[in-house]
Amino acid sequence: MGNQQIHRSGRKSSGVSTGWLLVVLIVGILLCGLSFLGDQAAAEWVKTHDSRSLKHLAGFLSRWGDWPELMLFGCVGVGLGLARIAQNRVVCKIVLCMMIAASISGALVNSVRLLTGRARPNNTEATQEWNGLWRGGEFLLFKNKYHSFPSGHTGTAFAFFGIPLFAHRQRGWWALLAAAAIAWSRVYLNVHHLSDVTTGALIGLITAFFVWERLGPKVERFLGHFFPDLRAEARS
Image 1 (cartoon, one colour):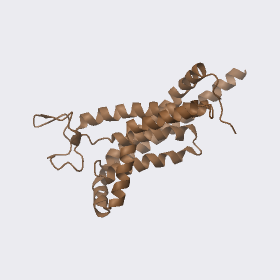
Image 2: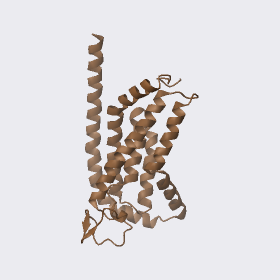
Image 3: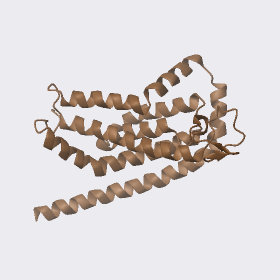
Image 4: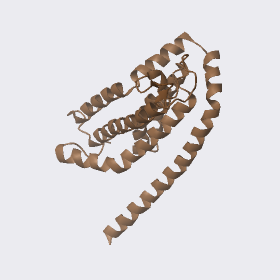
């Protein structure tokens, strides 16, 4: 009887999560579509709000918001979680999921943007915006100036910082501020269109949801098997 109640409760929770994801997906797709209409306005805003200090800030955020740096932060977080002063399985699970989500989202986003061939806003050599893999007989796969859509930094950042949101939905939203700051930096540095970062953000959030809901339990079992001394719950 108890097992049946747990099973029904799990199915109900899963249904709520799936419904919530569907709503977010629909809204996200609509916002991504509308963001294409705001590309020019965003570019004009950047031109009229040019600031050396803001450029330094944007450069800092872009430099430390890419996949290798996020993986470094993740390794530090896992190290702290495994340390005797913490010994917290929850911390390790969240940080490992953050690293996994960022890696998956980064792979997805980078695969797409290599194929779209969208010229970056600061690409003065481009004669057209969308080029695919070829442009006038020129192979663009290794031409970074044509890898604008979607934003790799943004997709990775929203997947990385999206995990705390789904792990602690009441108070995890703050982590998205870091992801949003990284996305802003890409637009402000004129290396991505507004639609690049909104699409990257949507892909990142969907990836984070999938990793936390589907892979999170497997990560927890892994930690329980190889690190049985870790506390299952945070100390109050």
